[in-house]
Length: 114
Length: 112
Image (tube, rainbow over all chains, first blue to last red; front, side, top):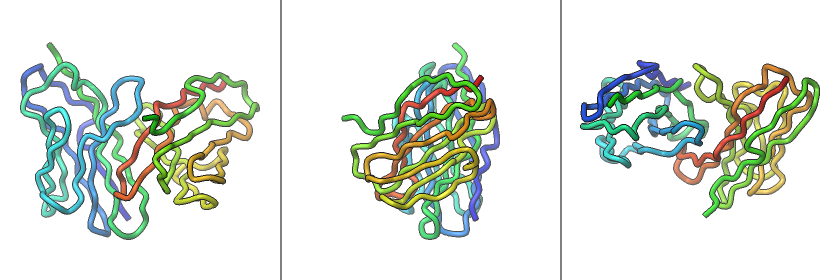
């Protein structure tokens, strides 16, 4: 069994300040972990992925995430928020082995103030 | 470079009507799936397929039907629409990397 918990439904930051979106997971198998971004009225787009290589993963648009097995976390960060980062972000876990089916978190809405 | 194409983008139905949401992908992906997205609920899996001729139920399959006769196409059928099926529907396909999905732009369905 697997599950994903996104700890904040909304995160509000000012432009130019750091972003932290938190994600905890559980999985019976070694996990692959992903972050997706969804801009308003659009489909989801892959932001970055962890698949058992380097634990610090860099994605598009300056985002990165660190896989911490001991904490079962995969938090998404960005040093400096931009207005265009305002979107919904989803953390996803898929087991390596077992069922192929991804499990989605409920999403975190990132609000960026000027 | 089409990726995943969903049609229609918008649809209004009356209760009891049936319709099919179309999904096509040109990436030769084995895995295809349908999700519905509702406010505060994230994405919920309706049905999925791991290859032509193979389909299975997800978290919320009731009221929906799917088939997978080709690798490219994965239509979602609403048999008798209900207001509870008002939602945004996303089709997604996946390649070799488990969990790496490519999404369509979505289909917004309203059932009156």
